Amino acid sequence: MIHPWHDLPAGHHPPDQVTAIIEIPAGSRNKYELDKETGPFRLDRGEPDEKIVAVPAHDPFQNEFFDIADIPRHSLKEIEHFFQIYKDLEGKRVTLIGWDKSEVAMQEIMKSVGRYEEKYGNGRKL
Image (cartoon, rainbow, N blue to C red; front, top):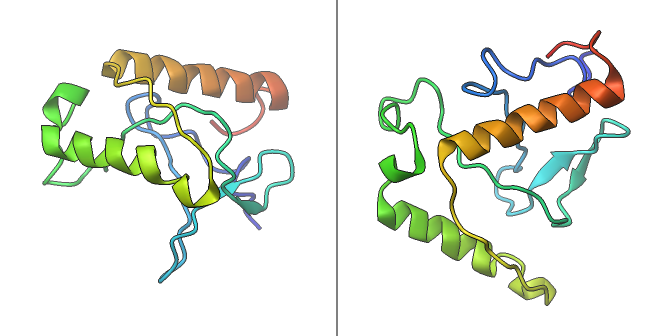
């Protein structure tokens, strides 16, 4: 059985192309993410973290997006709005810091890959 955390590569060419696992069951609004310690998926509890806007590598509608400035402004406003309100019903406030260039996102991806290697070793598939 494939372990969804350890047996999948970080991507074909990190940080430019990365593997993403996001589970949202059909008809549900619950987002599940992988528990990094045990492997099973868990309900996202919204701990502070970096958010990275990514586009599918082979999507003809988005294959010309290389940086945040390439994404339509209205799409960015929709994303911002989602993150401003998505915790409201839980009584939690979300603080948005803003958008950074793709270089910052790629640095964050490589830091994450480095933290993984530090914790689990270089023998794992990346």
